[in-house]
Length: 276
Image (cartoon, rainbow, N blue to C red; front, side, top):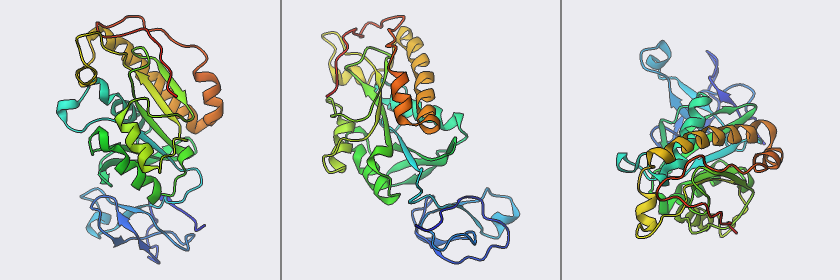
């Protein structure tokens, strides 16, 4: 396995190889990388404008493909302001908070997804927000997992779950889609395999006559949102714990105390369904 570098190349480093794909533009190109690497298949990002290195056309190297401790952290949702802050987009909100808390910039595009590269503790992390709309999320996730050679057990997917009460957070090692179309798509693009961890955020089931489709595309009520804000904080801590303490240790502690929401919105349910 070639040495993989993550970070800024030093001044005067001789370019000795070709970088497969530019994260910013999707085009192939060359970039500088350190002398420790005998091969680089990774990403480049332009330096900020205005600096001397930007004027020289230098690039920042994110050579992360094939890194042993690399994780993909995927938040599911629908793109566009129309869907912002809806129940179905809670996955987007959580990975945004994970990125913000760990100084990871999600400003690049690749494989029909918004992508950010950084670190949580000692782990290298790629934060992903598919922009394909929910039902096709697997297109982005499958391509990026294959490109970076990340095994399924290091692809963490964060998404909304109808079968959990509003604001309940639950971590699982594997399982079926549970009726969630984004998860169905990911499993399909993983060749039918469902052995990847997921962090589920409860949004409750609607009360008649409100349909499931309308429910997931609505925004949270004021009462629900108070609990969701707490759940987002808890979810971010769980993601960080996975990277710092490991998945098994985090799993053994985070699901022990099942929290009940302090308030229930008009469309919430206290029924705690299971996801097989």
